[in-house]
Image 1 (cartoon, one colour):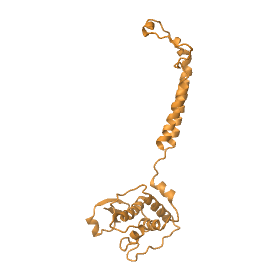
Image 2: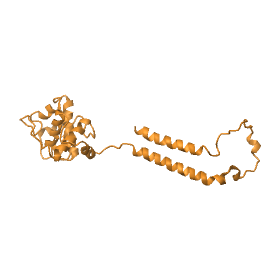
Image 3: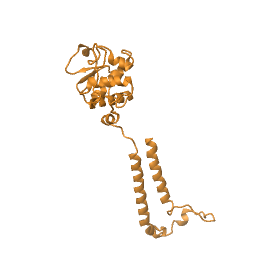
Image 4: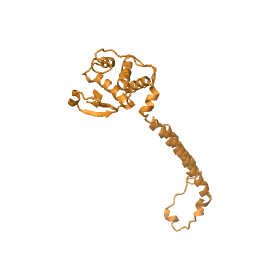
Length: 226
């Protein structure tokens, strides 16, 4: 789509340029009889004045024409550039997809994980938490659904031994952002972590299992491992 729009701008500019120049002194011969061929030697000694080509008379008009065509071409290319979609920043995506209601039960579980585990974190940290949950569903080492991963006892602090997700404040801005993050993560937009990152913990604790894993990155207060 991007190439098509930009190519269309260049094509129109080229067409306008050709049309404007087509009426100049380089038009094809249009007489009834064929032109008589002659050698370049026949004209080698001829004296030629610049005015013989009508340059003096046409210079101003031709210059204005070329300038106008160039300006039009620049305008068309600018329009084509403006039509190109630019990548959206994560903050823009959050504003776009924020909402009070999730699309289905699986997305609801993911939004709850983001809300309870990372609502005080920067949005990049919230997205990273959501990606860990999704990575686990694909890893073969954890359950295959989002809700089963989130509700697995002793995996996430807000669930622990109960296996039940507490009730979030669904009228809060934090919940609306969590819904947006869940949607963005499920769509795979703005991905931050590799697929093998399956664990994280807050930087103010030091679990023994962290020493057995490869540290990937730190975002906000959370350290992520693969």
